[in-house]
Image: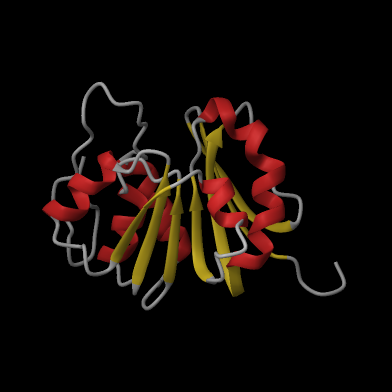
Length: 180
């Protein structure tokens, strides 16, 4: 598994064996970032970051920084350190839903990736949907990855695009426009 493009393009990402992570495939990451277009200077949150592949790809392509949140950040920690990204990546060991919805989380993000374990996506969808409104900057976007048969529903956001890659469903959202 490698970083697809940008200043870190071609650099290797590690996915430790035996750990319960499901890294976003290179094919899917390439499609996601192609659809997103330029992201220079973006503030990024990578929720359920796993190995950190999505946040690291964003940094490689010009994002200003990334906050990576997961209950276990060890898979991402190795990649962040190996790629020398400690100065632009903040790793937080926390439940992503609780962190996003906490009163202390007063930051806004231009781009939020949400890739929960497929089996819990339906259980966390309502809480995520509720918490996203305070974390998404004006004009910001949310990209979710879920099982095609059990999509992560975020009804408060406007769906922009949806693509299926085998059993994986990638959905792009933004804040609903006034009057919708």
